[in-house]
Image (cartoon, rainbow, N blue to C red; front, top):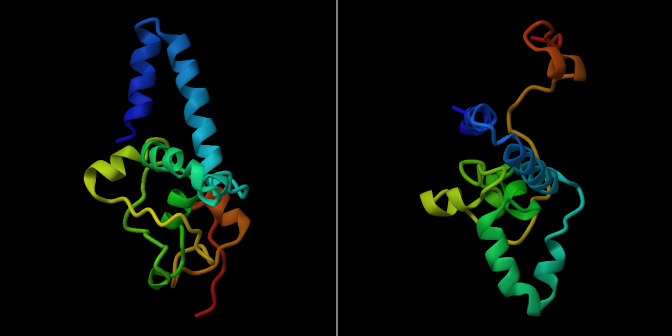
Length: 135
């Protein structure tokens, strides 16, 4: 349902465009940080003094650790949790609804098991182009 899209329209209509601009900066920063190859949250896990800070952060926003578990390939690795860790801004919702799995680790492999390989054209303009597959 993408509530943030509806909320953005309402905020702009009601004259809160600057609030939306601030929200957009925060949202994109967290999303980029969660999908980044740079695992910025590893510093919080490495230093014992920062563990309380990490505990709060990883339960409020998506971190590379919590979100990468959602994209892991092998559910048996003890880290991957593709049936949870959905949040891309507020991980709090996963905690609240019981879909959170916090391991402070990163999966070795990412992807979807059994999924057919697709080339870049299919990923950009599907369903207009489909990668030729052998039977």
